[in-house]
Amino acid sequence: MPELIPELIPELKINAERIWNSLMEMGQIGETAAGGSCRLALTELDKQGRDLFVRWCREAGCEIHIDRIGNIYARRPGTDPDALPIATGSHLDTQPTGGKFDGVYGCLSGLEVIRSLNDQGITTRRPIEVVIWTNEEGSRFAPAMVASGVYAGKFTLEYALQQRDHQGISLDEALKSIGYQGDIAVGARRFQRFIELHIEQGPVLEREGEEIGVVEGVLGMRWYDVRVEGVSAHAGPTPMSYRKDALAASALMISELIELADRRETESGRCTIGELDVIKASRNVIPGAVRFSLDLRNATEQGLQAMEEEAAALIDRIAQTRGVKVTLEQIWNSPPVFFDPDTVNRIEQTTQASGLSYRRMVSGAGHDAVNIASTTPTAMIFIPSVGGISHNETEYSTPEQIAQGAQILLNVMHQAAGQND
Ligand SMILES: [Zn+2]
Image (tube, rainbow, N blue to C red; front, side):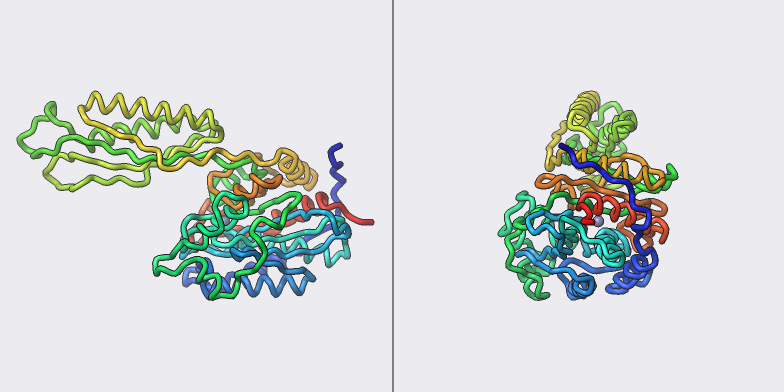
């Protein structure tokens, strides 16, 4: 029998000023000139951020556990010692010119949930757990989301520990140097549910005037390298009709690829050509070879498959009419993720009951929750990003938006953890 979702408790409130102040205090660690944060994974500054988080959690009465890849688990015990926790969390590491909100918001909102329950003397049946996932951003150690990936069994621990930064320092060495390699097996701590609260990092909520994003899943994506081979020749003596111009053919392909995604707007179809190399480019030479990247995204696997087939067909057609050869190589395939419908419904019902405006949406960006979703019923909550800006020092959400998201997280987690009367 499904658990009943109780009515919202009106006096169960987060402390808006406290969460904002905590965000600003954390943001001072590695603060950049333009008001952002730089705390690359497993650096001294990341250590300082972790230390502050751990201190705050201990002060709030949490037990701290650390696994072998440095993921931190802060637990507020429940009354049922056998019950799995309701978990939340995100990441404290940032991009080199990151903002004060990406990741940090989800971590400190989890702490705010615990502080608010403490303030109001509420005990829950299930524990509440806040998790800090190591190296989410992937800017110091590739790949991104590596530690939640090990948790979910997507990567082995050995593989992750061997990854090296640009200086040749391994993730294993970096973990040890900041004292954050614990002895718990990665993946050993299980959760009943996992809910990640995050800034949207895109423009949709703000443009649509909505306060909360109820995130149903994450777009699937496929990455390709496209190589177009023509014939390089002198720009003057070669008439247009004789040419096999690799760049002219690529330009036609790119234009039709973008139109392909434009037609699939309703299914969150997206197409990005982020890299374009004209090989041995020269002003007065007809380009003989071009390479471009292709990133296709869609909310469903069928949509993604259809986009791939259309893309391959149009690339082929244009190659034939322009007399060039083309290869299309898939280099990455990440299927769409569908979050747990019951957890998504709980977030939606809680948002409705609180009177905030919202939309169901899919995330275009990857998050640790994507990995956790393969092991645990998982969903996400978004709040608006002002101007849709993220991975940027000017990333911002207002104190009101910060409070609204944390409030929904508190209500959803409290309900799912079950109050003891
Ligand atoms: Zn993030």
